[in-house]
Length: 289
Ligand code: MF3
Ligand code: CO
Ligand code: CO
Image 1 (cartoon, rainbow, N blue to C red):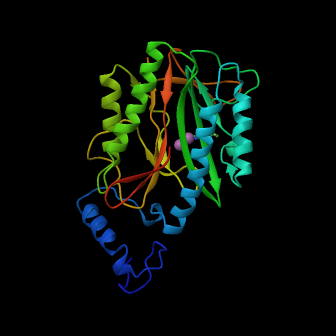
Image 2: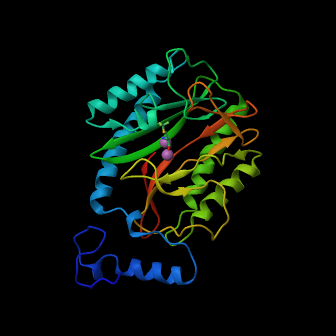
Image 3: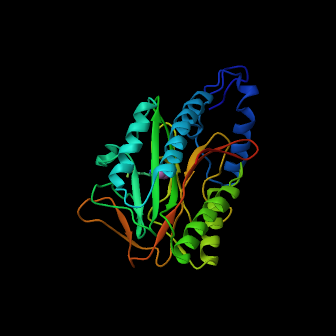
């Protein structure tokens, strides 16, 4: 598609094309000719989209801060769900998980050997030494922000604390690997290197993802990879990085009764942190954390 330089830009900014994404298109075309896989225009968020995604993130960040203040031993994961639901609704937002592909609750709470998609329940009581991932996604005005954090209940074992710390570092090295006009493979390479160096494995059955105008959008963001391969990372893309790091094997099984919860195959611990980020001309902006 050839655009007139003085037409409004395809991104929806309302600016003239020549002052907006003309350079972006030129850069993409060069990379495409060189044989790289490049993102389509639909993967670029408009300034209006970004405004709403940030509003969703503000609520989502507030939820995880609030959970961090209230989480304690003896509490059920159902109580966490209720806190998340009430906070979300009272801030004029919608919990994205509730009813998503039949998911029954407003948040995922995954404990110890649970990798992800733990379902809150009145029968699951947090106890001293547990490590818990709380993964929350919020919708404001049809726009999504997605993040998760680990919480340590009371005093945990040295092994558990080290896994939680290294999983956090895996997200951080993944974030550092994101460069405008770099590749998605750079992210997975950095994460897997850091996990393996520490004697841990990386789950490959779940990925990060584009997010913002929907819950799970293109592209998939793999947490293992090869540098310089995969889709080109371009300014204006919004996506999550959410590595799941295991103490033992990377393989898993899914709860037969609820059809959702993923557990480590060997019963060993798993930890995960997730941010939603925006790629800018210079680097990244962390939106939800
Ligand atoms: N928040 C999860 C993610 O990071 C998805 C949870 S889907 C649900 O992508 F249905 F389990 F809530
Ligand atoms: Co999430
Ligand atoms: Co996600």
